[in-house]
Image (tube, rainbow, N blue to C red; front, side, top):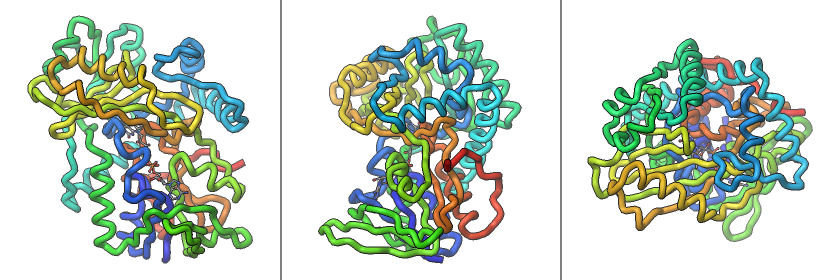
Length: 420
Ligand SMILES: Cc1cc2nc3c(=O)[nH]c(=O)nc-3n(C[C@H](O)[C@H](O)[C@H](O)COP(=O)(O)OP(=O)(O)OC[C@H]3O[C@@H](n4cnc5c(N)ncnc54)[C@H](O)[C@@H]3O)c2cc1C
């Protein structure tokens, strides 16, 4: 089959690999000059199945109200005159019931576990050598009530097959000595040894090279302008090249991996996706004293930020601003990342030269991505992975490749209400 994959982020490139591996002729279309240049560029790096719980849960509405209007809030909702944003907000509230949260958690953990296995297999089989760390993820807490809630979540995760263990501050510091600076304030932690971390951009670029050498055709600097419809079937896409010329590309199957742009491009075909842009920040520092840097990937529950070490660099990432597609850097948010990192790991990095970055997570109300066929024949979705696109890329790519190839999928496709 001839397959068009739209978008070369971590999701599109991984999907293209599995489609090619299944024997298809694959063309990957990307508006940027290279792979992984948008949201997959400088994320937190965590392959985090142990914290795959959706944001929408019975306690979320109260928390979000408390944070409303606070510029330094971990989750900042910027209300706008945008009907789609309000519709998303209502859908989010509907996902906050205990029953919906339980169903979404189960689906996310199942996809996360499968994806983590597929990533490990892919890395071994292809000998991918991007900076990564297999020492697990440790999430630490300074608030007793927050830790109590986390203990319940950890127990739930274990019943779903993810080995997330609640541990004492002493055990946490034994696992990661760089946490000694916060030992006295820490009330507990949880740890998942099978989770890992790695540089998603380096992985994406390397896998893109492998795709190219296996025969995937790359059309870079090429923008998808619209999808082409023939009756109830998607025929292909109209694309604009760097020189302004326009071409119509046809295919047997089209897979949309367009991140935050998915909604706008699929809407005209009647495929209404509920995806908002959830802006986040990261900072990357050069390491100057490796002994003070965490080797285990960490999550700081108080600040809702993560730390991942990639060889000689430390990445810290987090914060969420809902609403708007702007990528401008808010200096207060950038400074707060550096201040917190300096407090936790003094002298570890060159904090005078931070490399700040912002990206837009394609977020669905349930956190569950859109994976699968649409009601438009030949058009498939692999998008809306929100906070966990790196974690779920390998599993999502394999599932879509199986679906397009007419093969049984190893796990059921997660179900979200993809269309109205
Ligand atoms: C601060 C931050 C921290 C994060 N930390 C983590 C983490 O620790 N672990 C984790 O699992 N996830 C994390 N994420 C989430 C993860 O980065 C995303 O879910 C993932 O990158 C989404 O990948 P994607 O391929 O769907 O989107 P993208 O990487 O944005 O790829 C979409 C591609 O489509 C292209 N495109 C769009 N429109 C067009 C068009 N019209 N024509 C052609 N091409 C087009 C874009 O140029 C882009 O390359 C984080 C995100 C942020 C912002």
